[in-house]
Image (cartoon, rainbow, N blue to C red; front, side, top):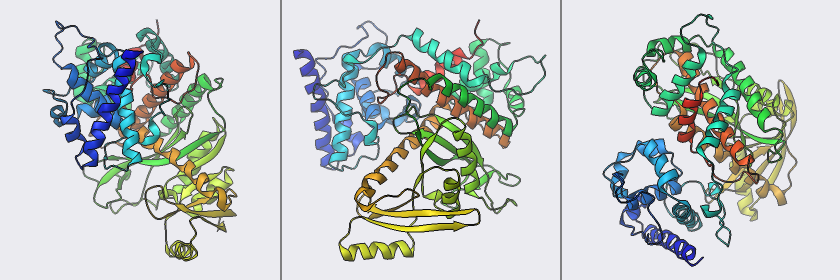
Length: 529
């Protein structure tokens, strides 16, 4: 106990030392560079004769940075300039990072990192320090007074358990897809799934990934890059949505009986962009970006958020009108309708959260027609500004305004909630179809903070699961995105099953990183013996 106390003290001292520098205006990386870690209570899991080229102290700083920022292994490898911050000659690759965390660091070291990083994140938000790299405060678990956050008491899972669970998730995730190719083809669909997972894992293009895959698995084992792209194009975009629906149903069937899966669910709808830098002529699925200068493919998703397992229940391509095509104007309420209807086939929905991009009467009425509650931030126009000015004159912090929506396909009662903004000074305005009084309006609007999870989903999908491609063919782009979402869901299902096997709540960080899961999926995609 004395040793543990010293270890936690050293962890908190490191966090407070960093806080001191941040208070003085030093940026986070510079503060971490100068930090002198006290590591007398920590033991390097590699013996002195081990050929590891990375110093123990440097790797501690790297993982402290990772826990503060929430970055994935893939993201870290894409920032070689950080090596100087940690005192390393270079940033290790993903496999080295994974082995270091699982093999080189023991419970004491991992507990030290968790305690120090989470203490610092809380101090950053408590004192409103300028650290744009810091992860959201909601991601950090509350430390109990007895220090139970330490991984000394955490559940450990063997590689065999993780591999077995990942294979189970794979069997539920990908058996719903069929390219419709002939029965006598050289490579079965599963082989293309395995290659797709591999090129997503190594973060390279199709041709290079296929060549590396052949080197790893054998010359005759995997298809050529061109063969892979031809096979991908056989998956019709509509059939991919149907396959995703079936895969989602199977994934949910695994967890529906678990008491820790709460019903009904809160869901979030959002649109993500995948940048495109090629010629846009003849590319109707390429849209403009918000800045008016960029070009991107856009995809809408519907995700479970809150305390439940964060699965993505539905995906939908977004097609917008642009100067280079003859597309009709985008009617976002139709995208919302399709997403929610698909989700309702799987789970009861208690609340829908959307961002301001979905602020429209058509979206409000669509959700009302689907018999679901919604909470959506509203754009501030002249009517809202007048209401806020009246609040200021009357000294009000919260106000509720009742109104009604009347559109071609229906009408319903609506309320506009004026509450203090959580992003600083000022008033935020939300729209909801629930009856909310002034006393509970501010607390009710705090539910919108659950939407932050969807940003982490997109970050993980793009950095850990989405394979690179320069293809102009939309069938390839759509397949790559849907496959990345499936890998994300398999990761989350694997994590859920591992935790469910030992009981307890699900409100703690994943025991399996996204990078580790992709590597296991790549190996587990082979059909079972």
